[in-house]
View 1 (cartoon, rainbow, N blue to C red):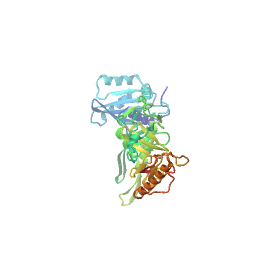
View 2: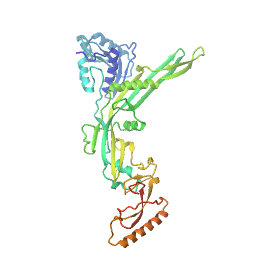
View 3: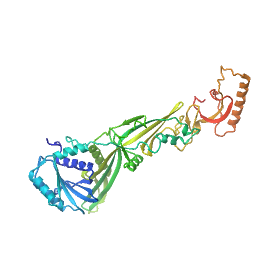
View 4: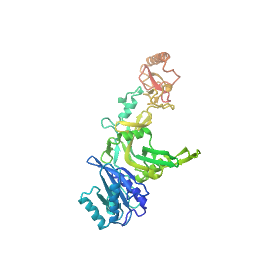
Length: 448
């Protein structure tokens, strides 16, 4: 049964460009569509430290005979490259006996331009290896690598404890263990070259010679370009990955989730080409030979854009939630070992207003668990261990005197303290009897 029946000859060449790139060949690009002289795809590999050029002829036909292989041999000999060269003929069908014999003789005679033949059966084996759908020509993304979701040299909740170091009135060592979850989110790193020249009768009016790199969030839906911080995080840690399947992430994390890649590798390539085509399209003004000013829209062709690599990887999205009395604080970030990019910082944020960010000073309220900015802090002036209402102290007169004395102490303390101003409040009754203090607390109704 023939494979890739629905593809045209040009579409088959596009597909083989993607296939060879996925197999790890370098500098993969297509030759000019016009008069390719037997050269459809050009690429390179490195063997024993020596870089070699590979010239590929693609034939989307039932059979390929000896003349095609001979033509490719001539094309290799005239192809300019400073180094060794070889060739490949790829077909969805089969090779005739004379074609196989000719290629074998080149190998046996030590010809400087050997040619490898890849038929439909070989394509099926390659398809199994790289996730190629032989019916629609799409290359699925096969990825089981992820950036590290935590630093193996530290505790998993270390980022939370570090964040709480900026909060006054609480020690990070006193924090409860947070609930920790990780979501492995798919991203792809795309590298593409754009090489286009625009000419008129006056000569070259515009030239594009650009290499573009981007990191794309690759979940379901339209691809979304990652921020510069996330792109740098992925690029700087791409070489340090772990196996998503073999690592037991259920032990350090309370919950683990894995998202799937939303599109095929082929679709991400097409998306990148469309985007770069729009990005590089510009209008150029130039003066003709007749001294008349003209404008021309310079839009690169799709063939001017060559996607050099599409590298998939999972990016861990780690979220910690810490419960402190009446409040829950979230801390979320993208992780790559000890490096991270913050997504949500619910720790450096006042629970009473919109004040947030690490530039502010925040104080923890031990009464209710609130984290407040300076505008929502005041002094807790005294503490009583027993309920004042309805409970008679063993020494009632002593209790009354102690309370009265404590109130006066609190008023003096508040008067001499610039940090806060005393406000009328209902006295809390759940703390130590008759002990005066000036500890900060928040303006929550719980503490008021």
